[in-house]
Amino acid sequence: LQAHLCGTARETVMTTDANQQIVIAELPTNKLGTEHFSIQTTPIPQPGAGEVLCKTLYLSLDAANRAWMQGATYRSAITAGTVMSGGVLAEVLVSNTPEFSPGDLVEAEGGWQQYFVANSKVQRKRIRRDPLSHLVSVLGVTGKTAYCGLLDIGQPQAGETVVVSAAAGATGNVVGQIAKLKGARVVGIAGGEEKCDWLQAELGFDATVDYRRDDFHRGLKEACPNGIDVYFDSVGGAVLEAVLFRMNMHGRVICCGAVSQYDTGSPEPGPRGVPGLIVTKRLSLRGFIVMDYYGGLAEQAEQDLNTWVQNGNIKVVEDIIEGLDAAPEALIGLLGGQNYGKRMIRVDPTAR
Image (cartoon, rainbow, N blue to C red):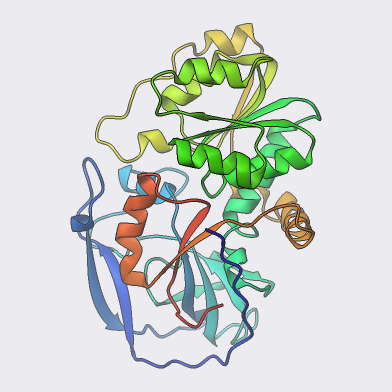
């Protein structure tokens, strides 16, 4: 479950003239399946003036990938016949702009392909750290999402109860570990007894609740006998509803995602109790996107997270799958809750 992979700077050379891409063949109307993807091979694109050619090293897999197929969100919708969208860690091979040099590491929305061309406005240079996979997980979008959302919006105080949904996932496991560092009592919500046991035994969560159990509501009450002060929500729906009824006065709810609503043609209703519970308990509910913090708190997040990892205060949990062609099944599995920690694809087999 944990990958601590060491790597060094590599010579930037191309060993092929072909670019493997995974395309959305058809948009799903219900559950996502492998039939909704197709693989194609095209020539490696050539950068124009002010552009760079990049080679994808790692591809990030996220539940939001499925949400993009439903329509426009904080970004434009995905359309059939186009390369599947996705965030990547890549290496610059050819640069036609003074802002980047061959060998630079960049974070961009390069999509599900081996090579892509982009301009300087749609990518961010990254400091090379080993292992490179950490730049996608704990030091990447997911780790920064956990840090910024919890500490800016949730502002947990020592002794408070913090509840985290999707707690064994990419963002949730980091949220829980940061909350523990801040002195909070941390309760994780996850799917299955195995994940719940793992969160307590390996990551030090104080209690866990299996949302798949019939007695989930009772389990949540028992795990939070003094109520809930901060809730980091990545699932929405029935889980959010259950938590709202347990929130304390002036509680803070961090709205990060709604994975329960993504991979279905008929999203579950809810939550009930809105806005009544928000008013009577004087709750604060705030949604956010981590890009809101770029140029500010996100940079502090990377520094602190790196320090905590180096000091052993945070365990890095990564789920690395080899090969771009494995991405469709890997995303489907992620939506089904297979992963522990950050799931990603190693597109370049030499990337370490």
